[in-house]
Length: 490
Image 1 (tube, rainbow, N blue to C red):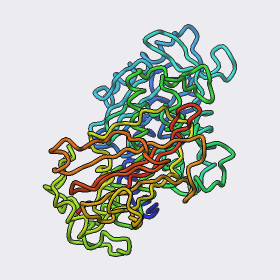
Image 2: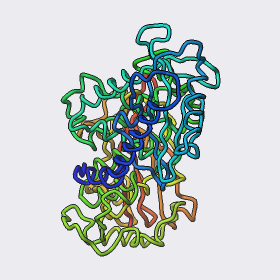
Image 3: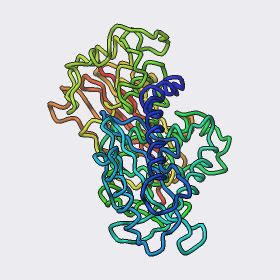
Image 4: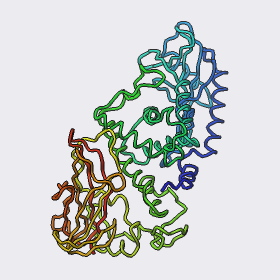
């Protein structure tokens, strides 16, 4: 489910920089502007320009009490005889000579930073206008003593145009959410300007008014799907040019390992977002989104067992699923067999999305096509034995006895047979203390025994997983993948 109201509250209460910090930031910037104009710093100031997340209105609340920063360009006329290093160094000297700022100053390669004792930093970067070419802007590299061309205003205009293609400012809000995910996960590092450019390139003028960008959760899903597809098609670190200055590569400072980490994280997030988006039932969906954003998502709601059903509509509950699962689940998938009783009593929504990815599950071995369809479904039929003519359809999470077995088959596009030129492989993964203790966790890929069908006997008490992977015969690429089908053996 999309849970639009909860996304709005999550942005306001957790992600967005709160108003009192914005007010404090603006007051500090006003004071800095006044100081620079009145200081004994030779360049004539043309104007000040906000830059980066502050200019794009994507600045977020710092995570774990860390600082937030804002970037300010001071655009000046050139000074005869000055080197690039002079502009930065002498601006730093002006602040160091001030009784107000001398203990707050840090001088870097491109900017002077004012560090406040509370929770903010303001980076002030000199930018020279028209030094050799009229109206051309150049930032100053103190380390190399070079002037470097820049287009901050045009980049901000580019970003604003991208946001304009989405509905209800949803692209700008999603940019904040993705930055928040980067900060809370900690398993990938990506500079904000690179991350902003990567997601900005995933929306085009032709998307204006499209349903894929009509609200925040839909836009988040669309952007992450497109970004994952783009990254998976590029196993090696690509160039990511500044859209307004193609000679500048925003990915140049990214190491190969950092790119690999980004690629892996985006792929994982895409899968989790797809699951949360498609999960039915308010409380089940809240749990799925919390798997992504943490417990601060929909933080005013506690999900209790009696509410974990499709028809639940209560907002207040008295039992948390984490408490219910305490002592039953384990990271190595040796789950206590009582989890079957709990899922039976409470409902399918107790099962967390993270439990669908036990550590012994093997990763797909086929290269991904540019587009991997999720319109792949598993159909399951119970029979007392493999060749029995009698049987019945079994649904996802339906309880079945530990006898007989299931015929699995694959369907695509809401019930159609698998088209010719394609093959299916099944990933069969067992969980639970019994199966794991005797080395029957499996988690690998199996071939069908009859056409597209595969027979699996029902043996071990637990919640087990079956998934279908569709491979295109012509090039061996993965073109479709089902969601996990859950087999609950009592």
